[in-house]
Image (cartoon, rainbow, N blue to C red):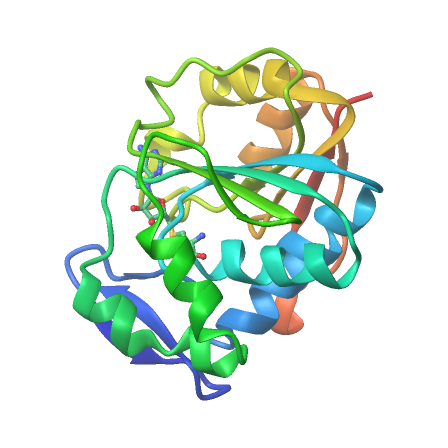
Amino acid sequence: MELQRTTTGEYTLYIPSMDETYHSRNGAISESKHVFLREGMDRTAGNISILEIGFGTGLNALLTAQHAAADSRKVYFHTLEPFQVPFDLVEKIGYGDISNDPTLFSQLHEADWESKTRINEYFTLLKTTQKLEYITLEDEAYDVIYFDAFAPKKQPELWSTDIFAKLYKATKPNGVLTTYSAAGQLKRDLKAAGYTIQNPPGANGKREMTVAIKP
Ligand SMILES: C[S@@+](CC[C@H](N)C(=O)[O-])C[C@H]1O[C@@H](n2cnc3c(N)ncnc32)[C@H](O)[C@@H]1O
């Protein structure tokens, strides 16, 4: 794992053996805000539960916590991460400074695994090391699912009909699953699971992304 600059100047992480980055090479923060906040959290109102697939650098968690506080909305944020980012890279990636809240960024990373941590009035975090394939999720527990796995070609086992059936059961009625991908197979699999599909423009000039809504 190594640091890589995006075209907008901030860092993301790059895994040479997979030839895969953690975020869009054309902007990590802009992607996270567009795909997960605007097309995910902002489609709901009030206090909500979010499930994230892939805590990774903690960028989505950080921006969501800031957004929750700005809107006075309480968010319960459950995130899965079986492969933790080494601490030295978390320190170097700089998202705390860029977002003007290094304390919040550290709190998210320092929170214990496998237990709920009240970060502040608006944000409660549960980080778990379980893999998405094996975790049992509560039925109709989440208003929003941030599906931020590595790309379908890089990690096909996470983009399967079984996984989307499991996530559908865990989504509340009217809840949404949002992801940066707009792959044809993904759309068919989400539809087969029961979701209604929308394809708004993606982040950083990408033609499409996918939002799946549970009727
Ligand atoms: C695209 S990155 C996520 C970026 C992250 N949301 C962020 O804000 O930095 C994909 C993440 O999924 C995690 N992951 C890999 N296999 C997984 C699995 N089986 N279950 C859940 N997460 C997994 C990776 O370790 C990685 O952190």
